[in-house]
Image (cartoon, rainbow, N blue to C red):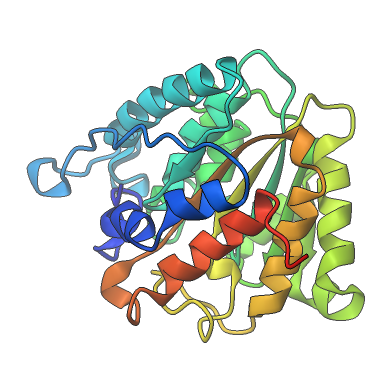
Length: 290
């Protein structure tokens, strides 16, 4: 999926993640692994990119709806089979489908590891890219209140953002006025990643039936993960990212679903970002040194 972003190449992320040994890493962490393959995604070259009623304020919104609706069904079916869906991206717009499926028939919390808030709407976005609106869409913010395909019925009080360091002005104001918990890199500097991640999981699991973990690889510093479309300096280090995933693993019995997004092999160095993503997934699923 690369319909939600400006820079091409992120659609090859799932292949790069598989090539980096994801299935073996999941099994080494003690879990059986079945690859359900790829969902079909319209090619941007064959569509005009208009966002329906929003025009270029929400590019490829119709095509995004098509993909995320199919993804939500796939995720919901996987959860119903008592399995944990691990969704591979692709740009972060796929989170609309991941969360929609995981939240079906349950109260779901969300821990969102990202440099960005992804809390824009068609009226606030500076770019028109839907990957910067995915969290707002799933929470039914602004114009998305009228889009039942996007709204996942998630209570903002059970959503925590971790690692935030790049917000647009209107997005900053919207988050400040919301019930979403936002933990910036300054919070991590002052308190440490394990304490912040633990608080974030507490937010996501307070009164819910479980939580969804969304890992955007630009959560990490670009020196660690260069293969992302929107890098922002000052992100999590290698060890901090593993510590965050270990906090997720400590609540593995409450983890309903997970996604790994924004791996762009074209911008990467020797598949470093995909390989690191595989390591982090293994940590989230319980891999330990001892």
